[in-house]
Image 1 (cartoon, helix red, strand yellow):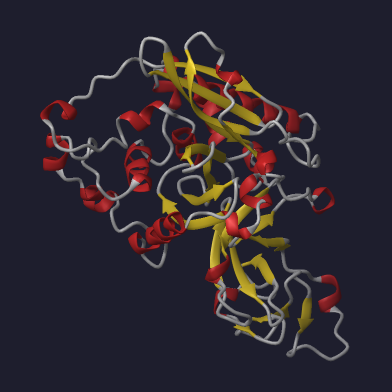
Image 2 (cartoon, one colour; image 1 turned 60 degrees about the vertical axis):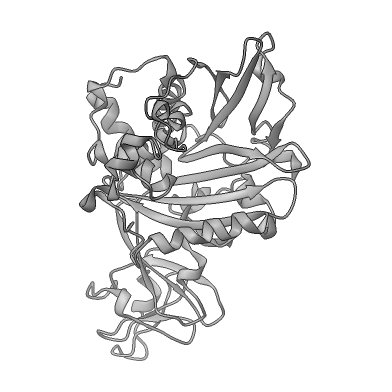
Length: 417
């Protein structure tokens, strides 16, 4: 449980807020590369950390991310003309390059100096594995791109399924990604046998490990009298959840589902889903499955199964146990059903946490410490050092109950790339 003051600290990410200042010190996914399909294509609106922005791909293929509103008279640059390596406002013709420099002011005298002392807010962008990442913090402190597998691996080993617009605070989504035990209920689906509708499972045990870059949570599920299934969920600062998917056919577990929960504003979040294989090129079936996710979304990335239609819940499937939750529109919709049902920003002062919430509680305390450290003038963790994630790994393995979970050899590590 958090105090209301702590909850406010963690959930507010707009300009000038403590958590917002932390978020702005990291590279964050801003949009999918294919939203800007070709040079000089139409610009797109992007809302990120409470800021209204516009993205465009210039004539040379570079991506710019600018304040949406023209520095001249504040007209929206979304309606601008994307031409000849710049975005031109349709109101008076002011034109900006990807770095926010004014390159033309056609209604001003030729010797006007305005272009030399006015600059449009622009954030640097970097494209990798189908996603445009941006950095919105101090220009003097731009860090390297994160050494996460979804960024560091070759494109053949990474699939970006899509992004989803979810109507809740970013932290609600992230906490779901770092909660292993909900999978046995929320994501359960079976064959309709009556006993499945009310599953009984051996109670798991949990443990957490706080690292320099986040929190690794381990859940041990009893498989029999002598063996546990060990499964880890991994949080990486500032808003990244990582889940082990399973094993490859001929080798150890190497598949990872990575989810970024990037605040759009305080009451909506962009969820970016990556599937990756640390051992080699990603199997085509995963590529097809992930791209299928886009068929479940409208052009604004809102889910067709959403809060307005109760996520198309099927009470008969729920009753029979075919789909334990009754929500049969994919894991991401099931996740959204519960996190959005909490309200735009849940009041964590009214919660009652249990042992199974150890990783969620540790993650909150980790983030509160990061906020305090940054407020005190320290650098945020896991930036600037390319080796900081050397001990990043996930586990999905069978292990003797007498053995510590950290001894599991069947793990997915960043070193596998």
